Length: 335
Image (cartoon, rainbow, N blue to C red; front, side, top):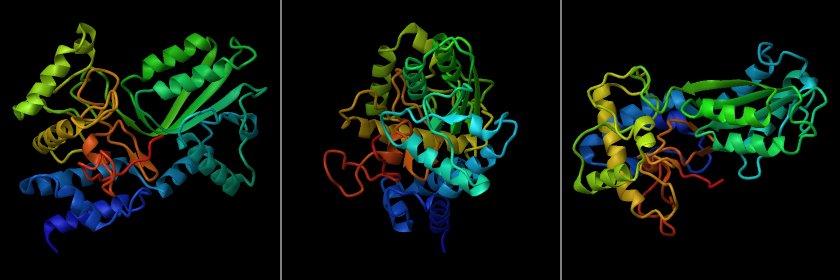
C-alpha cells in the first residue's frame, strides 16, 4: 500500500460514519483529485491531523453527552429540576442533540429529560452541536426570553455544545444578558477553538490563509474584499496572517504545511465562490463579516457547517444543479 492510499484509509477511518455520503476511499480519492497532483499527500496528511481532533462520530457525541449528564460540576441540582429548551425554528441540530441526550439519560438514569420553555426552578439547558458565529444562539435565546413571564427573574442557563468558537462568544453572551439581566450563564463543550478576531498570542484555531502571492484572480478577490472593509473590520477581523508567524498549533502537521493547505483552500475557494449566488459565502466559509471566510475545523457525523471552507462541502456529489462545479468531501444538508 502506498503512502497516499494509507492517508486516504486513515481519513475514511476517522469520518467513515458521516451520514450524507458513502464515505469510502473512492469518495476521498475523487475529492482529492481536484487538487494539483503534487499537493495530495500534504493535503491528506493535514486533514488527517486536523479531523482526528475535530471530527465527531456519533459514538463520540453520545459519549460526550453521557459524561455531561453525570457531571456534578455541570448539573449542580438534580436533573429533574432542569428543563431542556427546544426552541430552534430552523434546522435539526438541536432536535438531534436532544434526542441523543434523551436516550443517554434514559440509559443512565432510567428516565427521560424534561423539555419545556418554562421551568418553575428557572434552570434551563440549551444544547446544540456547536457555536460558530453565535448568531443562532443569540437569537434563539433572545426570542425565547420574549416569551418568559418575567425577564428579570434569576435564571440559570447552561449552554452545552460539542464545540465552541471563541471569536464572538463574549459579545453574544453580553447581548443575551441585556435581555435577561439576572441570568447566570455557564458554557460547556468538548472542544474550544481559540480563534479570536485579533490573532491572540500567536494562536488561531481556524483556517486563515497566509500572506503570500496568489493567482491574479485570487489577488483581485482579496483586494475587492479589503476595499469593502470598514476601519473597524480591518482592526478586528484579520484578512490574512503573516506566514512567518509561528503559531501555537496542535492541528496542522507544521507551519509550512499549514501555509500550503490554507493557500490551496483559498485559491480553490475563490474559484468556487465565483459561481455562488448566496450572500456572505466566502472561500473559507460563510461569514457575515468582510473576511475571506469563517474557516471552522469542526465536522460532525450528521453534517458540516457552511462556516467551513467551501472546498470541504460545496457542490453536489450527484452532479446536479448549478453547484456541480465541485465534488464535496462532506456534502451538507442546508438547515
